[in-house]
Length: 492
Figure 1 (cartoon, one colour):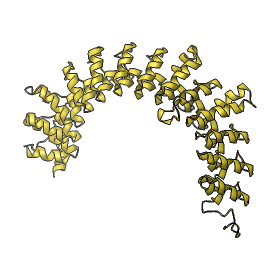
Figure 2 (cartoon, rainbow, N blue to C red):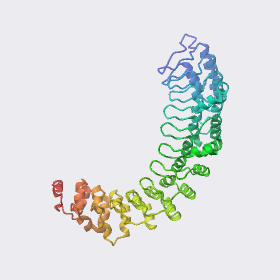
Figure 3 (tube, one colour):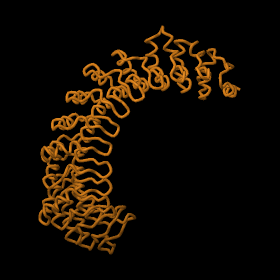
Figure 4 (cartoon, rainbow, N blue to C red):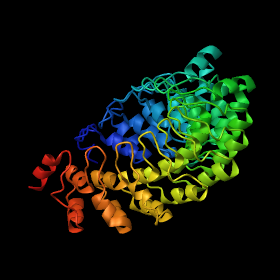
């Protein structure tokens, strides 16, 4: 009625949308027909992305949207017009499971080879959206005009920044993205059938599609890849290392995808691959607490005492992160060396203590770990627990030798007891725990070089609460040491 009274059919909103945009968004085919009958401009680009009415129609998932698109195209809408981000209606339609829209756009001249500002073709978008039907329709359409070699080049085209192919996108699909059972398998099979190459590596991270499948945990896609490309190619691809040195097996073990790891191991993936830090798949599985994977790798002859560049064994990493079951598996079932040391002479018990892993510390001690082992600074696990403010772990070590004053007076290479270290680091709870065992020792013990007491160390670190509790328990503020002027200034 307003139009018949002379209202401009293409009047714009503040965002530059017209009534035609709104009618298409609402799926009102009859209104779209009316507006077009009154000469509505199908080329107007509105919104922050600069989208036409055809872009909007392509984003919808009902058959009404296809009907709207048919009318727009008959009225002169361009199927290859790009939004501000470079996406055409075909890019947008590729995200949705409405195959009739894909067929329509292709029949009206939509070009699957056009890329967005990010370098993505509509095939990239279809693969990332797990739209196997859209991918199939586009590739089938290109067969009419391109050679097999040209289609292969198209399928393996990379995005601009990361260098991702459609196969990479398909490989990272997770099960919650499936529109129907087995769609991910159909998609990867289609891409490989048309020349997709899983061995292509990304630009910055040097990851193959197998790395992506290992990370997402998609066993269906991984199986399709290994079955499609043949045994020889599988050996090459599954052992390729990314920039950080990870093979697909390391990726799977870090993420806890035991099913993926089984597939890779069944196809003879190398178990002795080392990453840039010298860590193996077993290191990563143990570090992340993946018990089933740790067991699987050991069954496949992974070396239980393998060392990283820093000298860490899988046991060190399991201990550091508090994985008691993995620790037990490594030591009790597979004979991991309890006293294996890193380059700085730290054992797994050192790692557990300095990271506050009480349960693992208890487990290692029960298995026979040496609580008096010293690292290259002369520090025991007790020293490290004190230094990092873990009073419960400190208490564990003290309980072991309640009647042995030596555990409290043991010094590192700097001549510091655990009390000195706790005071210096501001570990109030640890200082309190130590005082419950031997208050006199905590207050009176002096370092060898400076003859500094625990009070001196707390004062030097500016730890007022520790200074207060030490003074309340008899520490002498006038006790001199080799740098007494500093402490005199602090107290006065």
